[in-house]
Length: 373
Ligand SMILES: [Zn+2]
Image 1: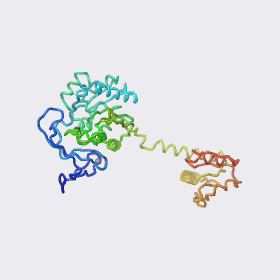
Image 2: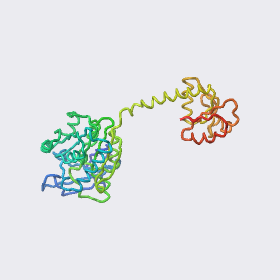
Image 3: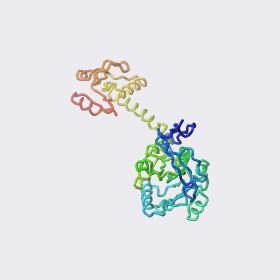
Image 4: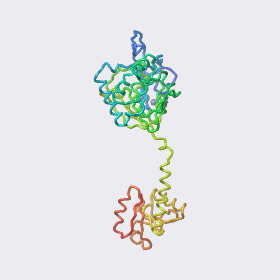
């Protein structure tokens, strides 16, 4: 073994084995021990890229004791702050969040809370692990919950669930991203939205920005990595884009409405369609042929036969391979047979995607052609 050690590390995002060979590991020495507070102490970083989800993460690097405290310096750049304000404004406007209850997870000393308030959002709450930061936020008049963020989100010591959340440059600091994103998922109401921003590894890699590596960015995300993580935790992705010249990756997500999952609407539609089909047959006095022997028509014919004992007089199809087979004991006939049909005047077309084309083809027949679906 010429790699790091004999223990196989698992990817923090997808749980697959991380590469262990020397060739697959980037080692960076002389890295300051602390990213945000000045120190002369240094250490080494070992960086690997997961071959499955594409995440780039640190291995064998101890977690900083204050890893979950958010330090920001956005106010030193007027143009960066203006960019962020425009971005938040767009998010608030697109999802009509002005009078909705929003939470910023990892709010630091309130620099983004200030911007959010400036965009006109009336109800905004922050969570922050740094005590001094919380005091600063309170002094500015913000409602901020203090504590380890995962603990706060899990214990629900909050007013939520919220209609929206935002989290800026925080996810990359966390050693267990899936746990964090799952907590975010539980924090918003079904149908609620969120904005997540991280450094963009696609850009860092393309431009070889090796100075970006720090002990406190535990995981870097490519676009596909972030999509993977968000989908794994239940979110649907509304939008994902590069910002600030490419260095930031911003995803807007939605928590799907729970009613999507129980097929209520689909179950209702099955019942409605079967009733509608039966009524149609009654209007035709039970005399009908079906054009189409594909899976749409097979399913419908099977169901109507089993539930009501109703069968078509004929079934036609353009596909010669289907001719001669039987659906509910009715033999599938070739399309040319439609012209010879004398015992029935009604043809119901059940051909899915090809419905319009088939209806046009049958229009010269002098029959009552009915398109289904
Ligand atoms: Zn992975």
